Image: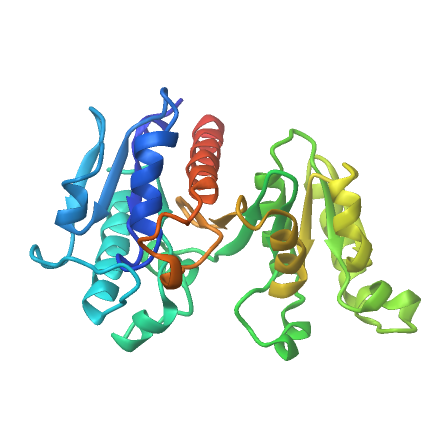
Length: 313
């Protein structure tokens, strides 16, 4: 493995008033594997001081030293802590101090209120690292890569380009976890257009693009398939990953099947970034009700992808 593969993962606290800090603390105390590698954790100093870090881990205070978040009570100061932690993690990768990032959940509304100019964390890391991101999701049973995500549905047809499909298929191959992945691609229209009766995008745009890409991947790549059945087929084992064309097409089935386990993965960038696939959950923060499964999987997936990239390099 290369030196990059042996670097720690950077972990950010997310919004300190949300469930991120308590999930991270509980996972460190009770759920962290015995052979887990090193971590570099960024967050408020008062929180970091209480974490059960191991030898080889490092803590990186961000924000004002005296800041102490109240669970369930988001503030502008807390949003700045979340942003400062993201900035630190992005820099740690650029400067060779971390191999990838696992981010805690943030509040887009609270970040926007302090002038944050991105629709999510995916776009933030793309800006700080360079590259064209792809949003993907790994669960225990489904792996989904999105062709588009935070755009209006009306804008989706104009984004059905060869470059966009190539990036999404490459992401699906990366998260599939097999040497010769079987990748399914969703159609845009009901029944994948029904041969042009219910829409022509599949016949005229999507399938010709996929035909042009098919020889570039070591595995199988479908034509556009009806989205109402493709996820059930993946659950039965016919496919290793699915490319969805827009946000809800991929996320509705994924979250229905494994809401508490799925992991948000940012690919297409120089470094890997993963995150639990849930929000800040201010309403239950501090009650001990939030589950650690998605965060635990986010660390596991980040390490797997980092190791694969390091081995390939």
